[in-house]
Image (cartoon, rainbow, N blue to C red):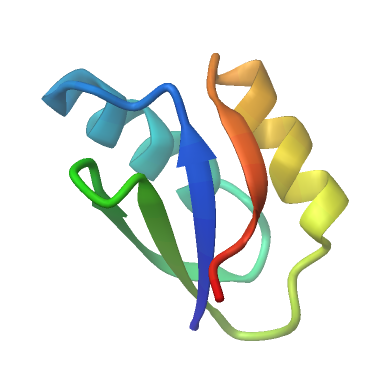
Length: 69
């Protein structure tokens, strides 16, 4: 599992949108969105390309600011 910092998330719609969009990426098994923390945890069957994930998040209208510490 990899946890990413994502900006611009505020409501339940954000959770649904990101879960759907990130979940469609090949190799993604599960997506957990924590609106309060501004984080998205992605469980995958392989290492994910951070640039690809950032593009998916950007196209959904949010900003992936990096991996959480």
